[in-house]
Image (cartoon, rainbow, N blue to C red; front, side):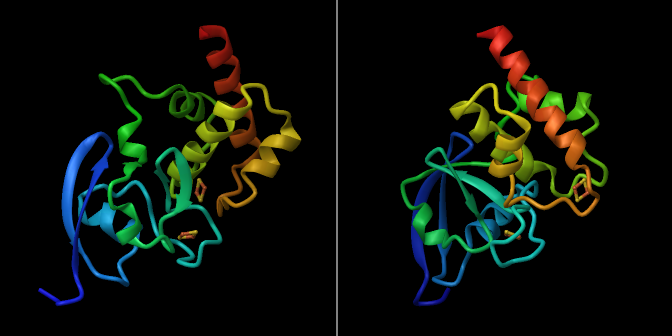
Length: 160
Ligand code: FES
Ligand code: FES
């Protein structure tokens, strides 16, 4: 074990986790080493949103977020959204609206869309585009993604 490594403790999708991390370790590497592969590395530079992870309720780009900063945090990934076999409403809306092709970008979009809908359950197309501007989809599924966010918002408002 390296002398620079540090033991951190945090909660990952509600479960307590302890891990040794190095200063250069990213949160993306950490969650993937914990067996959660929904967050992916694409650009590796904080530019595409494929590595989105939620830390204490805020979305972060896991590829540039130091793993050590997860000490004591509540960390959430796409794998934590499903409850009792039921997809989260945003996940379900992405499925129903056909808002994915290869799916590589999808976890990041879904986590960001959830953040948006928590702040604004009826966003306009412009507000959705603006909020999701940091997430890139190489397949170009943007029109369906916007529809999915609106559909999820409708359903969440109806269920409130
Ligand atoms: S892989 Fe992290 S922002 Fe692109
Ligand atoms: S669905 Fe393929 S990159 Fe977005």
